[in-house]
Length: 122
Image (cartoon, rainbow, N blue to C red; front, side):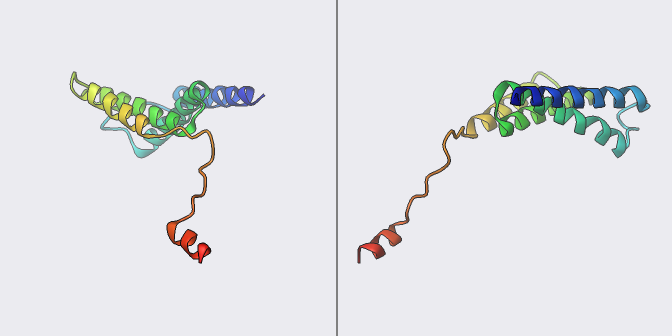
């Protein structure tokens, strides 16, 4: 049932993004795009990509980082600065960020500090 809710979120955000792309008049170039164009396109795209990756990974933070990486690659491609160097650097950077995020299955245990243990023994 939770999977169905996540899938309905993907469908809803995808349809909102499709409606925005269909209704909003695109700018003639990246330089002419206003803040409204950027927000109307990239916020639903970020939510859509995060939702899709969350369906696959089942970890929200890693899904968000991966979605930001994909959007960064899209922006670099849009500005024609995605080269043979910048693409792998972004991918390697996202890979290292994803590796640094630890997957916790259990909540962290509260460990007592050394001072509290010594005080209780006295």
